[in-house]
Image (cartoon, rainbow, N blue to C red; front, side):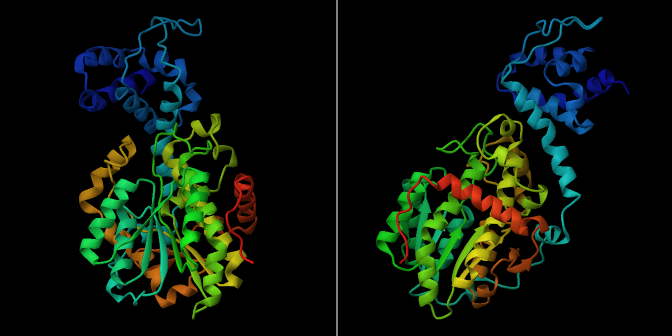
Length: 436
């Protein structure tokens, strides 16, 4: 089948989706007159993406899907000074639209290719057996101090709830005080105990520093730190306050810095605890198996990062979570720190909180996948049960099991390189506290 005939056939399949995706339907006739043009494949695609850059048939379908959801219909204009024989002038798209289409064209083919390389542990974590453990089995946590980042929503909120119900003192570290207070009040009604709000914006290193200072001004012990918060599939244009990729900056750099600032009190707590341990729970994802490493050129805003799809940037950040967890273990296990990572499970997608097209598409699965209560189960087990002190350097999977992360995440050389990069990023942010 020729390229042009292939595209005209695809248009018949994609057309209903385009009609449903537009608020202003007045442009639909113009859209489809353009899409069904016999010259669409050559004049439209080659005008902004060289044909070799479109990797597969499924990518070409995605290009049409992406175009059908664009909010503006480009008008035919000559570009590059080229005229295709018998087709009229090529069609010019806004320059800002080109990276978007390139990213969409790579999203699903990249994901499908990655799925073929998922480990047996990865598949087991995506389709876990029924749990053999429940939060009702948690020990009494009276006298224990714990911090849960992103504790006002989702699995973080469920984690805070269970910890409160077992008498822990819990700091809910969140960005939005209003939303956090609503969650705190709700959990107080349900458990009879009140969490403590700690303002923390992981997308700002200054906010991370301030949050650590506030915590250390109030507490002299920290038994468990749940690095639970995360950014998932935001627009690629979104970056942190300091210009880092929002997902890596929040999920990895922000949590790394927060943990480093709290490390002295964690190690002090380990020395004073009966079991000689303090724990750091790094919430990662099976998505870490969908990438093969970390590209330092994509961690700060720049042309290469903008060419990546938001899903790949997310997977890279989850890969980084596992690497950082392992590196904390290598460096501080001999001082009583139990650092490990985990995949909480494939859970319902919050389409209101994360309104990207990727989340909306995945949200179709919500009726048949577990909610946040099940997602909190593995980190509650690993963070509170006595056997959790033996999990240092390990990777846990749903539900309350030990799995196996991708082998590349446990490379000491990679861990060292990423650690050095992270240290360099926070070097000029003066730490608020040191243990003597």
